Image (cartoon, rainbow over all chains, first blue to last red; front, side, top):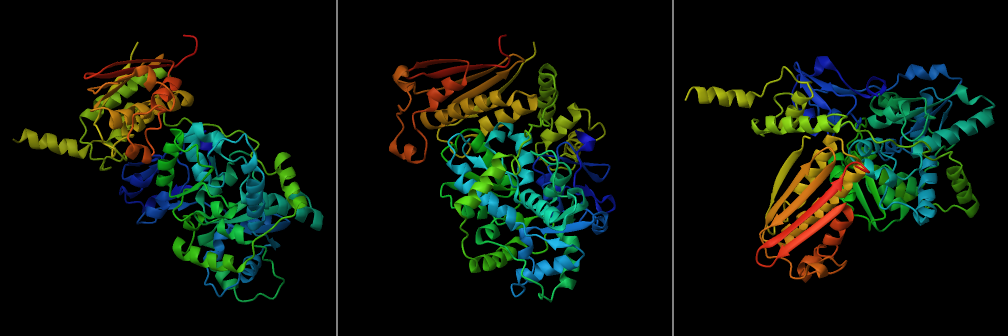
Amino acid sequence: MGEEYKHSVILKEDRCIGCTSCLKVCPTEAIRVREGKAKIIPERCIDCGECIKICPNHAKSAITDDLSMIKKFKYTIAIPSLTIYGQFPSNISICEMLNAIKKIGFDEVVEDTVGADISIHLIKEYLLKKSDMNLPLINSSCPAVIRLIQMRFPDLIPNIIDIETPLEITARIAKKEASRRENIKIEDIGVFFITPCTARVTSIRKPIGISKSYVDGAFSMKEIYGEIVRNLGDCNSSNMGTSTKESLYWPIAGGQAAALGIENYLAVDGIHDVIRVLEEVELGKLEDVDFIECSACSGGCVGGPLVIQNSFIAKNRIMKYARKMKETKHTIEELDSFIKMYESGLIRLTEKIEPKSVMTLDKDIVKSIQKMELVTEILKSLPGLDCGVCGSPTCRAFAEDIVKGENCKAVCIVKTMNGFKNKNK
Amino acid sequence: MGNIAYDFQIEKDDFERAGEASSKIKKILRQLGIDSGIIRRVAIAAYEVEINLVIHSLGGTISISIDPKSIMIIAKDIGPGIENVELAMKEGYSTASDKIREMGFGAGMGLPNMKKCADSFYIESIIGKGTIITMKMMLKDGE
C-alpha cells in the first residue's frame, strides 16, 4: 500500500503554519506536525476531510480532476451529487441546475437519483428481508466510514451491506444506456462526478469492494460552482429531472433510514460519533438494531468538505424539493430487474473488503509487546496534557512515534520546562 | 517470553466511566496486532466483567496480561460475593434490581457471555470477601 494509495486530501504547504488544529480532529491520528508543517501519514488517512473543514488557513485541500479531462472522451456524462440541489436558492428548479451543468460541456447529465432509487428499493424489499444478514447492517455509501471500519473495526466488515453506492450504480446504467443509444464504445464514454466528498474521490481512484470504478473523474463542487452559477437562467430544454422523494432524502443524515422506511435504526453522523457507535456494535451491544446509517460528515453528505452551503441550509432546500415529490412505487418486474442486477454482481460489492492493520506497533507480536512496554514506560514521564505542541496528537501518540522511530527530533516542551523549573528550585 | 500487564481500578456504581477499561484494553490489543476475532472476544468479556463490577460489586480491579501465546484477564473485587455461583452462571438469571434492568443492564447474560468468550473460565466467590474471575484466551491454535 502506502504510496500507491492515491489520496485526495492534501496539504498546501505554503499555507500551513504548523498549528495543531488538524492534529486534534483527525479520527485516525493520521497527521503529525514535523518541521513546522502538517504531514499526512498516507496509510492512515481515510480522506474524511475533517482536516479540510477545520483548517483556519485553508492549507488542507483536495485534489480533484481538472475540467479539461472531459476532452479525452468522445461522449461525456456528468453525474452531480444529490447534495447539489441544496446549493442554490429554492426558486431555482432542479431542471435549471441540471441544464446549467450540461452547458459546462457535457453531452448528458444523469441524476444520481437513478442509483439511489435502485439502492433504496433493493435494500428495502430484498436485503432487509433476507435472514442470513449480519445485524445491524451498515450502509456502504460512505467511503470514509468503510475505510474507518477496515482500519479500526475489521470485525464489522461482514455487517456492511454489499451493494454498490448510488453513484456507481448510476454510472454503470448511464454508461450502458449511452453506449447503446449513441452506438459508441464504453471506453469512449467518460462519466464525471460532481463531488461534495473527498473520500469519494479517493474511491474513484482506488475503489473498495469493486475492482474498477465506472466513474472516470471527479470535479470538486466548490471549484465548479462558479461555472454552474454563470450558466443558470434557462430551462428551455426538456426536463431532465428524475428525482424521487426517497432519493432526495439520501444525502441528508437519517435520510437513508427514512427512505428505507425502517423503524429500528440508528442514524449517526459525524465521524467521531460514528466511532462511538461502532465501538458499541463491536461489543455486540446493538445486535437488536436492524440498520445503522453512518455518515462521516455532520449532517450527512450535505455536510461534505467540498460543498458551498452549510449543511443546515442545504438540508432545508433539499427537503423543500422532496416534499413536492410523490413516493415512488416500483412494479414487481422492475424490482425483479434490480434483484437480478444485484445477484449477477453488476451492482454488488464483489471484491472482498480487506481489513487494514495500520494501527499495530509491529507485525511480530513479541516485538509488538516489547514496543508496547516501551510506550508505557515513556508515557509515565509525559505530562498527559495532549497539547499537540510536539507535533503528535496525544502524549500516547508521541510515545508511539518515538518507539516506532518516526520521531527522533521532537521534544516535549512541557516536560523540558518542568525540568528547567525543577533545576532552578 | 515477554509479557505486558495492565491494571484498571473499577469503582462501584461508576456508570460514567463504565466501559472505559474495556475500551482501553481493546485499543491496546489492536496496537499489539492481535487477531480481530480474539480482540472482540476479549473486549466483550472485559466489558461484561467491568459492568458486573460496577453494578454488583463494591469495587475491584481488572488486570490483563498479554504474552505472545495468550491473554489473561483477572477480575478481583472486594465483595459482597456471589451466594450461588452455579445459579449465577445460568443464562437469564440475575439478581439485578428492576431499576438496573430498566437501564438495560442485568439481563443475566454477563457471566455466561464471559464464559462463552473465554477459552478457559474460572470463578471463585466467598460471601463477605469477594469474587475472583479468571479468563484466558489463547492466541494461537494448538499451542
